[in-house]
Amino acid sequence: MSLERAVTAVVAGSCVASLCYSAARYLYFHLSPSAGASDYDAGGRIVSSIIFVIAAATGFIATVAVVRSLVPDPWLRAVQILDVVGVLALLAWVTIDSRSRSMHPAPDGVLEIELRSPRELSSDGNSAKRTQVYFGNGRAEETAHTERIREENGAAILPVEMKVSEHRGWSVVVRRNTDVRHNFWDRYWFDLRMPESPAGALPWSGWIKPTAKHGWDVADDVAIRFRWVAP
Image 1 (cartoon, rainbow, N blue to C red):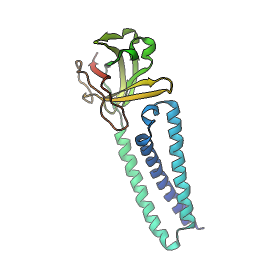
Image 2: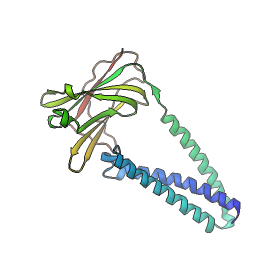
Image 3: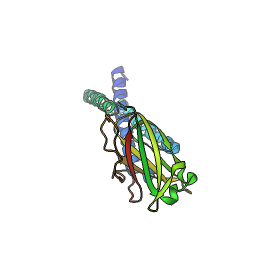
Image 4: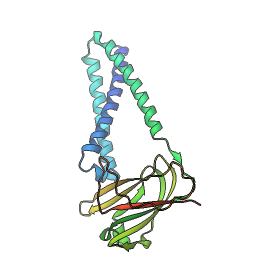
């Protein structure tokens, strides 16, 4: 086997491996019935990572084997052209993806959240452990004040403070352990209508419900409100 064919096979395999990895991620997070409950858990992350690696490795090995053994010499040039197109597409995707993941520094201040949920899930410090609230799109230090849980109109209100260091959009994630026996968690995504860099304090918003988003849960009995407290 010539060096040219070997290099062509490896490049083609790398391109196909990237496609298989992306396809496996899409299918897992959009079609798996448990993806909405476990992808933030350590077990879910490990399982999904193994699936993605297996998909990528399978695509790589199969493509290399086909190009090395089954592609006729007259077709090798066509495969090399596809290799170039694939590499350029990967470089473009990496560039766009890195820009979309770029973080914005957050100004000094604290994002205060109040979670309204059924009383039985947050009525005290122990049951509140079945509910988790954290920043959804960046880096932050979250502090849930379970000692300040209060009741309003039959619902429990849990205050949470978030010290955001950087973000790529203001959002909050809420997880609720709705099935303790099977460790099943519902998860909700909340988009916060906030400027990229608040110039000053923002008052309390109204109560907002979870954002309807594919792969995320929605519910009428969970809502949050927020405000930005500037120093």
